[in-house]
Structure formats: C-alpha cells, structure tokens
Length: 327
Ligand code: UFG
Image (cartoon, rainbow, N blue to C red; front, side):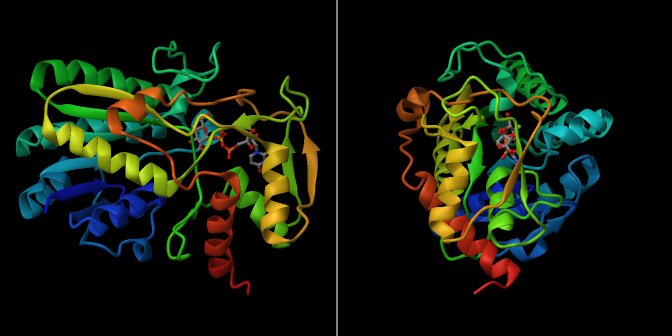
C-alpha cells in the first residue's frame, strides 16, 4: 500500500482520484484548506486541513503521515476569475507549488503528479493538439499552469524531482453512484450549467458564441469523464514512482462535442428541454480544443472507457439530481 498526499483532494478531480487510489488499496491523505473543496468529499483517508502556501502546515503533514508521493490539485481554476484576480492566481497556483516543492525537498519526496491543463496551449494552430504544439497561453490561469511546468522541468533536472504534468482537456461527469461530482460555486462549466437549466433551476442557460468557424458555429471541446481522468492519474503516479524523468501528457479523448451537441445530449439524457439564449462570445474561448492522446496511450496505456458524451452526462445528472433533491 502506498501513501499518497493529495493536495486539493477535497475538490472535484482530487476526490475522484482518492476514490480510485483507495479502490486499488492505496491510502490517500487529503491536504486541503476547504476553500473550494468539500469535507463531505473526503471519504477514503484522513483529512489534513492546511494551505498549500504554508510551509509549516505542509511540513507537519509530511512528518505526520510520511507519504510516498504527492498529487497536486489545489489551484484556482476559473479562467475568467484569473483575469480579474491575477495576483491571487499567481500566489496560489505558482507560489503554492514552490512552497510544496520546498516541503517535498525537506521531506525527501521526489514523485509528483501535477494537474496541468490544455489552457497551456492557448489558441493552437493544429488540432488535435499534441504535446509538441507551442505553449502560448492566453489566460492568467493558463500562464500560471505553464509557469509551474517550466519550473518543474528546471527543478527536476537539478534536484531529481520526478513529475508528470497532466494536461487535462474538459473534465466532466461524476462517480456513477452519484456520491461525488462537480460542485463549483459559482459554476461556470457547460455541463453542470446545462443540467441546471434542464432542472429548471436558475432560469435558462447562456450559450456563449454561435458564430465560430466550427461545424455548427459553437465551440468544440474534448470532454473526458472524471473516472477516466482518475485512471490516467494512477497510471502517471505509477510511472513517476517507478523512475526518474519529467513528463507532459495530454489527457482527453481525441473526440469533440460542440456546445449545441452537448445541449442536445443533455435533453436526450434528462428527457427535459434545455432553455438557452445565445450570447456574445466569452473572452478567451478558443473555437476548438481536441487532444491528440497518442502519447497518453503509449506512455500510460491510457484508453478512455466512460467518456462518450451521454455516459458523462448521465453520471453528472445522477449526481446533480441527488445534490439538488430531484427524483
Ligand atoms: N459555455 C456556455 N455556457 C456556459 C458555460 C460554458 O456556452 O454556461 C461554453 C463555453 O463558452 C465553451 C464551452 O461551453 O465554449 C465549454 O466551456 P466550459 O466553461 O465548460 O469549459 P472551458 O473549455 O472553458 O474550460 C476548460 C476547463 C478549464 C480550462 C479550459 C482551457 O474547465 O479549467 O478548459 O481552455 F482552463
């Protein structure tokens, strides 16, 4: 049994990774300040309340629990918010990781799986996107994640940190038992917002931009089920625990769905209409983001199992119905 410190393990993706680790017999130790995570999502190991920017709190967690490796999920993730509060994003997303790396160095822990994002690519010229595409992020959020990637490369080369930076595309879905899922406040992501509209909560949905040069004019994204994402994390963890190196790896499916296709799928799955209004484009939205996952397939043996759009929405709907008290 390996003990893994899950920094940000009370959040959406972190809690699913905890669940997957526990299912294979590892012990996830959650380190989270609960600023956006939820105590009720910590079910598979102890919770250490602490902030990633506090060396003392991290050091205490390392000396008390003596983990074998670290997985990092504790970040500000909302792209629009980053444009308004850049200092907070750099402080938490980059300053926090520097502190984490210093605490790992003190505890002599080398393996790290880091949550990166397709936002590091900005507006790519070639889609599907390979890891060789140039990284020119167009948002504060993307720049903070890219900054950490560069920092990890520099530090790994010198200090022997072994890392995997997983560049997620659009994480979506929930655990099929409806137990844990996406609970952001405010919620900005498409699928939960579409489900909310279908449930008749909070009025209609805003569709941002119907004039893109895509098949139906709306943005195309690569939605990856959070269960598949968790599987990819476990495989990446095994790689970085097994030996040295620094790796950058896309995690998506290679298939895309447009906003309108997602709304139709939500209507099919829920059996309810999704009222929406067309609005102007949202700043910073690229027309089409699709992963080339050749590297994930070869390096991690990755093969998405649950990521067709209806399965994703079906699982998310089950979770949200339970959370919203809908039968
Ligand atoms: N959208 C709407 N209405 C909504 C919400 C979203 O029309 O209420 C549209 C967006 O404009 C976009 C698409 O649905 O075209 C997907 O939007 P999301 O907010 O669900 O996801 P993003 O693609 O913007 O964000 C994802 C990750 C981020 C990451 C980003 C990188 O969730 O963490 O990709 O581009 F930074």
